[in-house]
Length: 284
Image 1 (cartoon, rainbow, N blue to C red):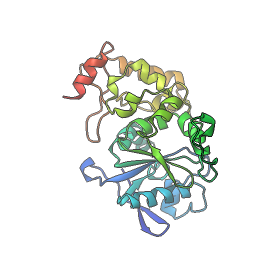
Image 2: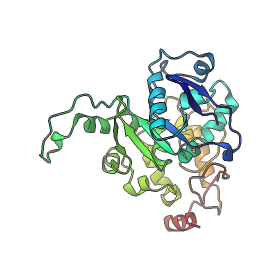
Image 3: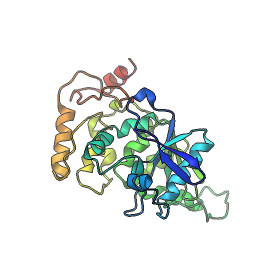
Image 4: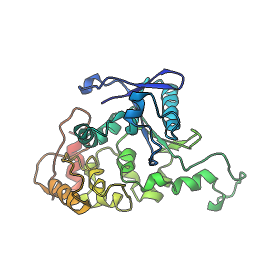
C-alpha cells in the first residue's frame, strides 16, 4: 500500500510501498466519483505531471483536510495504485474494503454538490425550504456508483464535503438522508459487522448502482461479502456475479464479517447462517 504525503505547498509525493500492515501509518482516504481523462494517475505523480487536471483539486483538498485532522498521510485510489500493473490492481481491488475500513478518516468529496448558493433561511418545516446543498446531496452521483457502496460502509468515520471543501456532515449526522437516498438501513450504516445482514439485503444495497466496467458490478462487492476472488476482466457481468455467488454459497463455518487489515479474508459463509448467529459470532 502506497500513501501520499505533502512535501511542500501544492506538491505531493508517494511513499514507499508498505508491505506489512503493521508498517502502515495512520492515514486519511478519499472517496469520490471519477471523470474520464481528468483524474491524476500513478504515472502523473511519478512523472511530476497532472497538475492541470481537474482531479488535482481533489488531491489538494484531501491533503489539506488531512493536515487539519493532524494526519500526515492520505490515500487516493486514482494515483496510489499503478493500474497498468495487473497483479497490483488485482491485489488492490481485493483489499479495497480493508483499505477504507482501516483509514482514520474517510472524506467523501462531492463534486456535484455546492454550498455556494443557498436559499434564504426559513423556520418552516416544509421540505421545499431545504437548502440547495441538501437537495443536491440526495441527488449526488456518488450514491449511484458501485464502488462507493463499500466506501460508505467500511470506514467508521465518513465525512461529506461539498466541491468547495465545506463539511456537510458525517454518516451519523446525515443518516436519515443517506437512508432515504440509498435504502440502506440506519442500523447497517452504524455497523461494520456486515454479516449481520442477509446476502439478499446486501445485494439489494447495490441493485441501483452502476460501474463503468460490467464485471465491477461483482468485483465492487467483494469486501461487502468478505470474499477474495480473482479478477477476469472480459468475462462479463453475469459470469463475475455467478462466481461471486458460488463463493458466497460455499459451505463454511467461519463467521463472516468485514475483515480488518492483516486478517485472513473469509471466502464464504453458511447459506443458512442466521442474522442472530452472525451478530453473536462477530462479538467473539
